[in-house]
Length: 497
Image (cartoon, rainbow, N blue to C red; front, side, top):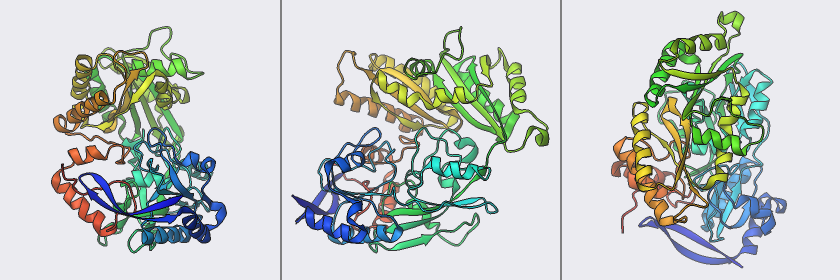
């Protein structure tokens, strides 16, 4: 078998390639010489778990390489760029836009970062952690907990830190702590140009106003131009008390009014404000063991809100019991903004929220939307989108949930297995355009609030990003990686046919 090398030349939104052929055995031998034969996988069984994405992106890798240091990453990048070998960086492979999985060609080399671990260095005084790109979120938080600290990006998956930076993940507690970008102080990155050069931006400074913040060029671009190997992240004190409630609003309009009232009453204590429709909660109850209707014996309401308050001070120091304060607040809002509430549910309520994605996979073929609109537009968007679905796609089912506090929502739609008509990709594309046009063009929102841009949704980037933004983004990408050797997305203009 020969491995086909290509020098990418993007034309009309596709990749045209200048190809040469070289036996794959030669490539395997060269990479094994750089990082050791045990860390180069060619056997289909060994490669399998690196070839399938969390939701999309089933492909076929020519090889999988697992470097164990920045120096080894640099050596692999240098070899692959110099020879024109297609190379894809992959963290924990939990992404949802196919940015870290190979395509079906069988010509791409997957560079897994899972061995980039090393010691998690915690600086308590500076409140920072220095981590390898292969360290997972759970591993980092387990280590931080020993020091009373946490990295509070709350996600349903367990990604690696390198992948979290490359996609700029957000999560359920973004309103309090921000996304990864807001908590990132420094990175070490292996560049595509010059091939394999290691750029050390490993600063632990929170204040550094000395020109371009170069690390930001590698945040949220899914591996374009460079491979992150280490990072310095800001960490936070663990909460010493929390309060939770599952709230039924009196109306859809009351959802936003209640959020405003909570922010006015509790300020920075508000850490999460998550909305869930009745179909979504019912799906969890039906398909996740150990989860029951929290409102029993009453039925599940049309819509409910998971609210969390948190404080890093104890009740004694703060002089306030947050759960009692939240309960008192909700009592004052009964019949005004609150129709019902389940108080102090803690982990049981969060289990419902964190089990949603797992549960709705049982309902049929998932058509997922990771979108955001201004908070002030959330009610109008939800109403307009629901009416459009009922009118134009009545056989589909909506399982929506998400982060009202930051304007984000997972507007997930399922095509039931037994629905008529049967699943059809042309109709799905029509649905996607209808939803995204509504989000972006009518409500000034984003077609990708959290998951980033990858091969799965690159066409929508070119549809919605302004021509001026695409031109500037293309210039930046061209300057960092003139051969487009790293990353699977082209951020410059894509001429229409």
